[in-house]
Image (cartoon, rainbow, N blue to C red):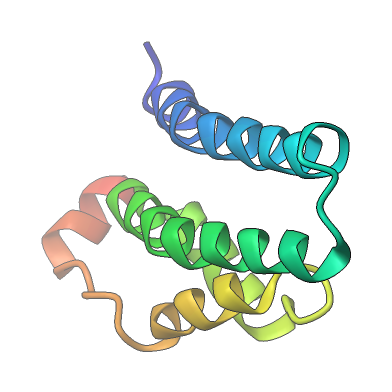
Length: 109
């Protein structure tokens, strides 16, 4: 398969279970446990703290455009993403190891 397709599949296979888990947590809180807003927010905050580092690790393993998108969300993500994710993505601003020139020229050619 094409590298971009493979990376897209890796991204969604890493993210989809987390999205599904968050939706199920929300559903369970609302319809099964009948949580009040404080308990629901507490559960969601725990989920976010647990999953934010996993998403950053996935982004770093995929590299390229995924890192750029992570950098974008670390700067403009407030209001779009939960604060835990924005905090976890901030190290992408200057903490991503650079590729050497040989790798970059190979990609460009």
